[in-house]
Every structure is written in C-alpha cells, then in structure tokens.
Image (cartoon, rainbow, N blue to C red; front, top):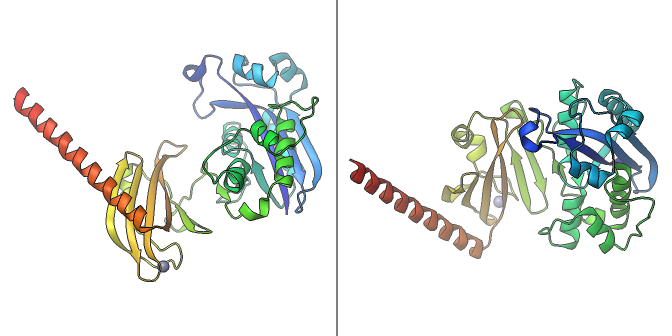
Length: 327
Ligand SMILES: [Zn+2]
C-alpha cells in the first residue's frame, strides 16, 4: 500500500468567525501531496491551486503565511470539484492518508460535502497523524511540534526554494520526516477521523492499540443520551476484552470528560475515560479510551472523585442558601 502524504492550505472569512459560512469555515485553496511507496520512498507528487468561490477575499493572515493572493488563485486555480477529482484519481486505489496534525482530513471532507462531492473513503476512516506519531516516538506523546520544528530537530535540510506553508512543500517535508523517523515503532497508533461517524449501534468502532483500546460511538441527541447508552458506559478490559465490574463508577471531571475505575480478575486495575465530542451535525458522540492503571492512578481517580463530590455539595449549599435569601 502506498502512503499519500498531503497538506492543504485554506482561506477563511476575512471578517473572522462572524463572517464564516455554516459548514465551511475553511475554504481549501491549495492541495499538495507526495506519494510514498510501502518502503516510504517518494514515487510521485501532486499540486493544485483552487479558485475560491465562497470567500471572495483572502484573510490577511492566510495571505501572510501562504503568500497566495486572489489574483493568483483565480488565474492558476481550478474549481474545487475539479481539484478534488484529479487529486483522488492521482491517489489511486490502495493507500493510507498521512497528515501533519488532525485537521486536514476533516476539512477536506467538509469541502467535499459543501461542494456536493461524494466521499469515497472507507468507514471508519483511519489515517496516520504524523504529528502525533512523531511526538510519541521522540517526546513521549506529550508535546505537539510544528512541522518546521520537527524538520529542524531531524536535521532535514531546508530548501530555500521550498518554503513552509505551501501545500506541496509541507507535504514534502512531512514525507521526509516520515521516511527518516522510526515510523514502524509507532505506526500501530493509527488515528480515526471523526468527520463521519458510525450511523448504527452495530457499526460503532473499537480500535485496539498496544496498551489501550479506543471506542467511538455513533451520534446521540445529547450528553444524557450518550452516557445512558450501555455500549458507551460499559468497561471492557483492554487486554482480555471481558466486561468488568466497576470499582469507582463514572463521574464527571468536567462537562466533557468522565472517568471510572474497574477491575479485571486477570489484569487488575483498569481506567476508562469518556470524552464527549460535538459532531458535524451539532449532535454529540463519545470517545472512550481504556487502559491498565496502577495503584497510584487508582488513588488519583478516587481523590478526583472526592474533590468533585465536595465541590458539588458546596455548590448545592450555596444554591440553597441563595433560595432562602431570595424567598
Ligand atoms: Zn483482562
């Protein structure tokens, strides 16, 4: 299988968020990509400017970093539909998408839907987020670096003719990093794009990674509904996948994060987290991760739960007092 390392440049409303069009905050103005074979050798490249049809001015920050102006885009660009067709034809049949960061595939699909293009990608759409993998390999997964920082750190020579923030050049540097880094050590940590979500309960996604599992739910109307779903709130061992008894039941760390602690008779303490996320259509879905926990983790979870409880009691006390005064 080939790798399609791609990068997009996009424009946004010159008035910022206020002038943004629903479901198209970012209009793609350039697609750049490098094709690598399975041994990560470059075997082709793709570059296409897109003539904008939604936002008629370039946001000053965008033109500052990309050095693209409206005249150039109108002169050298093609309509988005044309650009995406030729890009997908160039990608070929069997490939993995690779990007720096987690935004490009979502924005690509947003643009495709906005312009009435069908999305031919598999569900779930798995891809390699090289920014994440690079961080896992060299920075313990904690730090997210910019592309130019990583290029410098890897000692990859920067070509004056290939400045950053041009789609093809950024794809080129991302491909260089991919070829040079210890990709095989971290490639198990594949990402899933959340733009399109499972529609039915039976299509909900379970991904197994070294040391943890990830579950991605379908869409629900609201948080209460998603948390009440048994498939969402059950905890399965990340090693043997058996259903577990909870030691500390789900509690809210904040409005978007829930934590619980369970025990596997074979593998011991297991920690699970549910993140509530907003879907493209404005509904919610859950991403649950589960992994082995130490005694120390268990203690921290118990402490957190007590803290949250105390805060809630305090809040209720103040509320009651407020009622008394106003009544
Ligand atoms: Zn187990």
